[in-house]
Image (cartoon, rainbow, N blue to C red; front, side, top):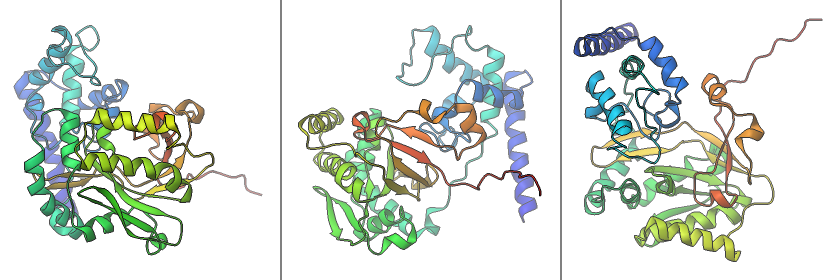
Length: 351
């Protein structure tokens, strides 16, 4: 069965590349395209497999990826028409920055990506999230703006038991039974279980602040309960009240200025062992948007201090990276993120 699946996957990849060649009339080089994809930092937003980035490339049905010609035209429209398709994050690529041949090779590499969506019907908790989110999503997700759309996707009431299970999935198993838990309700987060071990878990909903609609199950230690958690509770309160993203940012800034919020003054840990959860109620698709990871409090730490480079991270995804993207990140609520992986083996001289 595995051999047949591998053969089918190889056939799909070859067919995609052959189709691209037929459409463009020129031989494409996905191996070269892979190197260009890395060299231009495409993985930063689109992930290493087109599934796990801020802007996924597989399973979207985007007309931009229907052919190499459409892909090149998209890049040129952005760059040469000043641009017709502006974006705060996507770079512009005139022909002087990226040749047609290079763009086509990148396109051919992207077409080797394969969607690995799990079937939500086989995951009880996630399926219940999908079922409950479909109805409220149709009533609130009407704006086309990315941030507004992300807020609408996150401002849904999940079944209490399902949300509680999802929140606790962030923690190591031995911490779950005695952790405090918040669930999201009509007026924001409310505590449904008071724990005894100092850990606090909830399904964080601040990803809209950087344009994502990922649910983020997170469990903080006691230090995080006093620093990070109050900010996330405020975000939840204002999100439930359908305040604007700008109003929420202003409230967070004011909270730090007044001393209501503050960054931790010692080290600590938050667990996100379930990763980010991407849920699209409109299609019913559910996926893990990022792998599970540990987050260590990193008040004003920088990637430069860690010796971080994109090339090094590409070669070893378990290397630590600093994130300041979430609520309060500009005020010291940042993290050093570490993805668990196989320990590095080192050769030792024999006696």
